[in-house]
Length: 118
Ligand SMILES: [Ca+2]
Ligand SMILES: [Ca+2]
Image (tube, rainbow, N blue to C red; front, side, top):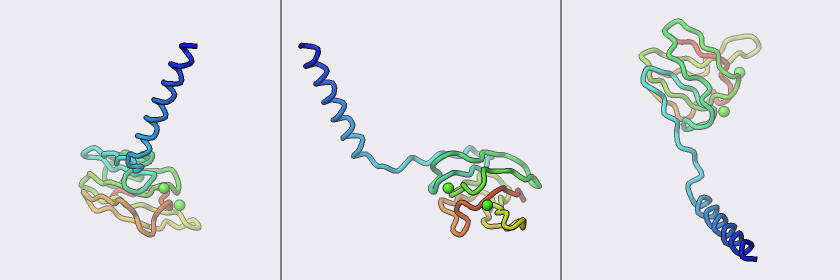
């Protein structure tokens, strides 16, 4: 009987902890992109899966999981161009200038299929 009482207390404590965590901000913390790298993220504001973390040099083409990129951070001295393959045609849908971040990519969300480094 005593153990039942204790477990009820434990359950109550867990429920309280759950309420406390529910009150915390729901937004995920941004994931930092290392110096010298370009990073592409699954969701806006640099959250979700890190789809690309690359230090590929100028002239490289870097494949990415299709149609998932929603934000990106360019910590390199090169331009990174997000390209969508549409009806077999390569369409440059978003460009990151050197050392720029894009917390959203208007017009290019969930479209990019690979990146060209220029
Ligand atoms: Ca996405
Ligand atoms: Ca695409």
